[in-house]
Length: 500
Image (cartoon, rainbow, N blue to C red; front, side, top):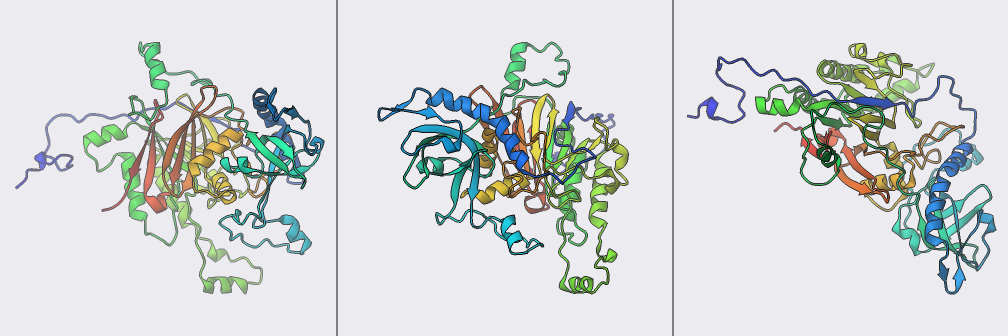
């Protein structure tokens, strides 16, 4: 018969008579940037066209600089390539290059003008998983303040293109009035700030500069750092009726708290310094047909009995249990009680009566122990510039392209310098007038997107030495997986929480 002490990792052990080791959770440096917070006096009376103009104004100089460095002085077939200022300045048969905004003319894409013309004032649910048709009817066009021209050519097949991204194209106009594209350029990654550019690093205890430089490199090798970990999870989907994954949620909570684990595992878990919840913390529940019929016969249309407060209560209990030992950053998602348009504003602390004691006032610029933030969200974690979303931006780009490569779409957004290019065309958005916050003015070190079909990660590099760690965080409801990011090397590991 085996002795309990001989079983590695077993929690059932006889008292040793020695005082147990006191574990302290690693503390992380955290500074949120309120890049996507809207003012209280926001108005929706203005038009959306200003967003495209602002985006073109901000990104056009970068893409034109790259295009000029590449194409100026280029001669093809004894004809020099010349730059034209506007789309309307393109002349048939002349080799030229021009920059502008991409617009995808797709038959499967929803069209508000068509709805208005047909007197269809109530929008029908969008059932298309893809706007991309694959039959050749989709048209790629380039437009600026002067006009629009259709783009054709094999060069377009080598890159992702969606409505709202800014590019420069080189080619010649054919007899059909289309621009035969020979080559195209993207703005590429924006300048990347140094680590600790917004805050001061902690004391290094005599660590040499060479060692610091070595630790700050991002590679795909084994983790060399001894710092903390950042846990990222999405799609917790607390539900009022379905308890199918309640056990996994309890196991996740015990895992983060270090309960029911041996001392070695507890020592490792004490390195988790922060939890980031990236969208869809609550689940949308479908009403039954009987309930729909009952509501349809209500005199005033609203049935207060159909509201189920249990999902928010379960999430509140989850957070209130976790918060005394670990800070939490909470991003809203498509299913959460926040505004539907991008950027989503923070979930109000009134939703969490047990956890709101850990928050700060909604108008405060400080960060609480429970930091309810916007979606998208930008901040600095342990000196690294971090950008994260709840996944709607990638889901919308996914509909435009003939690909399932979510990491490739994230990389394309970074090289377009825009984290939500399809807003406001097919991704609902606030009509910004003075600035487009979706434009990436600084290159993040870490870019994560929640609520994705599966886990994935890779590192992409830019022409000026930029390096971005990309992470697709899967829905916990579907995969029971979370991601752990090393705060020194940005190495990522996947952890599966499942009941055997």
